[in-house]
Structures are given as C-alpha cells and as structure tokens.
Length: 120
Image (cartoon, rainbow, N blue to C red):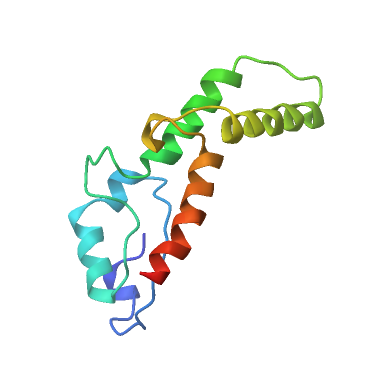
C-alpha cells in the first residue's frame, strides 16, 4: 500500500465501490481516515457488521449448499445447472426475508406498488 506521502492530498471527490478482499485492512481506522480525507465512500459496513452484504452472502451460501456437491462433466453442463437453479430460486423458492414470497412475486408486488406510490 502506498504511503500517504505518495498520494496527493487534493483529489477530486468521487464515489467508489470497493470490494473488500482484505476486509481487516479496509475496515481499519487508518484506512477509514484516509478515505474520509479524500472524500471516498467505503462500501463496507462497520467492523464486525453481520448485515453488510447479507442477502448476497446468503444467496451464495444457499447455492453452494444446494449445488456445491455436484459434479458436471463440462463447464456448459455446470452453467446449465446453475441456470436451472436460478429459475427455481427466483420463481419457486420462498424466502423469509420477502414475507415467504418468491423473488419473482416480490418483484411483481414492487412494480404494482410503484405506480400507486407515485400517484399518492
């Protein structure tokens, strides 16, 4: 990581999404201070936050649990299996976070509610 002397102090303020590959480094107080000095918005939650990216992590965990022990003879066969799983996941698998609706049902309800909210 470059030292502070290597980084200009007056950088333009931009929004940056950064995936924390080394989360301890990117949630450190020194990194937070460096980002704040330069107007960079960090995309991670607070240190130890279990809610940071929870929905995506839950999806990947479920996918690995439900398909992770399978073996496919080709990459195309694996892609087909993941596609089939996504069709099931979005159209038939109910989710407690969505009020025991499927993601497709929740999306339809959202789109139905949007015009009503805009008219109000």
